[in-house]
Image (cartoon, rainbow, N blue to C red; front, top):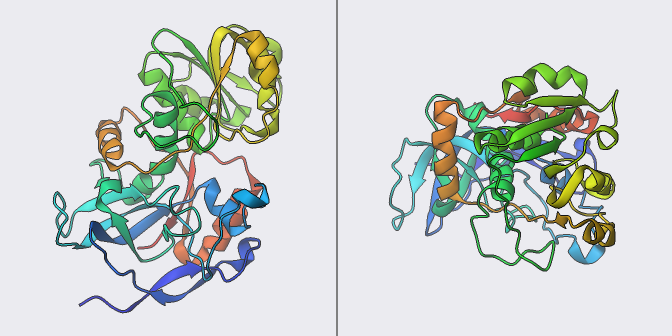
Length: 339
């Protein structure tokens, strides 16, 4: 018999990390097509703090309408505790990981910062062997983002960020620059590009150089000492894992016919210059995909792709984890430990 209540991190208003409260919350109600997971670890991602703060960077018409109390979090790893009658392929006791209801749960419907979470069966995969729950929870959103940008979009949904469908480019034999290479998406983008045969230039602060070379970077640029757009020319693709209004500065590093993929494209205003230079600028929004996670799980289990964890915090100290995120310069991912 499952309990009626559980512990979760909830917020009752928008604001800074101090609005996150560790308290009792109702257990999820399992619906058709879902599995219930006893959560062991939760990965933290930028949409978590964007939503916590009310998505203030978005135009008002784009800001999600939420109902309080709100539970953040999409990336979970844990053990299957219950299964809806119409679900096949999973058993009680299976270790599994998922990115839950993203972007459909953008307004807080994912509810990952909790002891239990219900997950659509189409969005979950068995946890890879050889990595623990903390490593698995650090993976879904960031690795799916890198994969869907660089290898396989994985869906046919309209692109909310641009008119045309995002199309990954051929990577084998190409030169790829990754900006923000030590962060959550960046450290996976380095590995995915290298796995697919690219020569990789990683841009990050100098303290990350050893790690980035271990992950496969052929060259590194310490942006605190060298401005990358002053020294790099004729790359085939720039993956800007920082993105935002400054991403246009990389246009002059890209050869004609090349591409710029800003992970966070809002604020880019140099479309006319990109057209003149013959550079394709394209982005997409990552989407939950259990079959892709299963495919990526095989790469994680063999060590072909390696998740990096910056630091962990107890679920009850989610506010401290968000304070750490606000300080920036994160190497890999931040993770909350539930058990």
